[in-house]
Amino acid sequence: MQAGKVIGACLSCLILLLLLTAPAVAGPPDQAGQTYVVQAGDTLSGIALRFGVSIEALISANQIPDPNLIQVGQELRIPTPEVQKEIIPSSLPDEAGVHAAHTAPTSQPQVYIVQPGDTLYRIATRFGVAVEELVEANHLSDPNYLQVGQALRIPGTEFPTFYPPPFHQVQIGPLPIAQGQTLLVRVILQAPAALSGEFDGRPLHFLITDWGGWTLIGIHALQSIGVYSLVLHARPRHGEEVTLTLPVRVRSGDYATEDIFLPPERRALLDPKLVAAEEARMKAVYAQLSPYPLWEGLFRMPVQEERVTSPFGTRRSYNGGPVSGFHTGIDLGGEEGTPVYAPARGRIALSETLAVRGNVVVIDHGFGVFSGFFHLSQLRVQHGQMVEAGDLIGYIGNTGLSSGPHLHWEMRVFGTAVDPLQWTKTAFPTEVLSSP
Ligand SMILES: [Zn+2]
Image (cartoon, rainbow, N blue to C red; front, side, top):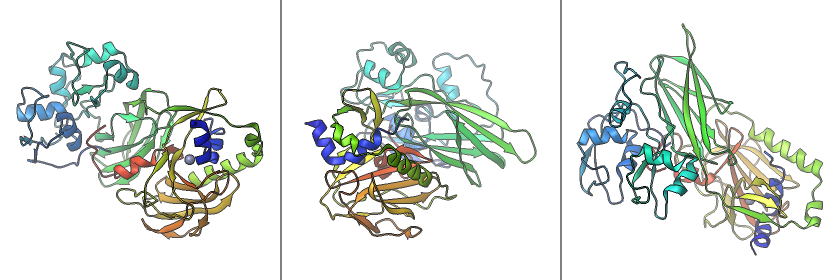
């Protein structure tokens, strides 16, 4: 039975949930004169995303008559993401075709690639848009006819064609972003300026570079589907602050919901005060802000034989009640005593025995990014110690409120729980994602 199995795997993860009320980024800046040979499985929108250019720019640079018909082996010229040389009046007639042409230089297409089994209704639901809006935005003549691999423009998220100085360009990704994922925001400036901003009212912390700055946003797993404001402020040393507001559409993470039966005696195991104190402790650890990233490249899986027994984000209700939480990490199965390795470089922020989480290791990967490992049988690191990717930090166990050996691995980005698996597939902040 599902409920019994889940409790057996990760009791404390479940119980913790009760209390949780709660790039691909853009392309590399310079690729003048670059070409790309179409590979099997490529779509035009996938290629566009990979190189950080718009589909329209690809179409016009290669004079492609039918965007759905590109051939394996075909050589495509990758246009240079154009520098905005002059102001394009935003009052240009916004007709089909014209629109595509004048948004090409700097707009980042928010497109979705049709997958097997998709229907227009299902896609619309996932993005929180009406079917009619999708039909109109994509000039679909027959809404019942979708092709796998077809790129659909998601309406309501158009980026500006012109950025007010000192902004030069804003690149965000991966787009479209789903609940529970990590979003990269890269701001390129024409002139030095102090950067700040907010996403959905939450403040952003920028890492300043010589071309501007970047930050990460953890999209909450329970964030409602819809369009949110990404507000960016740039304040030049001499001059007025300039504010830019961009729409970011958050799509469904397609997370399952499960109802868990918790016997009363299990609930009674928990002293609410103790649980709340432990929760506050963890929150304080995750709230520390080391100024620079310590990680580099992709995160590795923390155990050698990866077997995800419970994915991130599953919504949970208890004893038939309403959804009251979600799984904040992934559970990895393994025998007691299986070595657990650091997934990336960092500093040990916590290595202790806690009542609910058992033996816990938390790694501070820098710049607001943390990994937490719960229920370990043994701790092999000490607070303050630096670890490299692949260093032994402990062993899988069954400590704390856990009724079977497993590893709960969770990640936080500026305090928000995000799916760790994304970090094993996308190298933040450098990698260009090629698919949504
Ligand atoms: Zn768990």
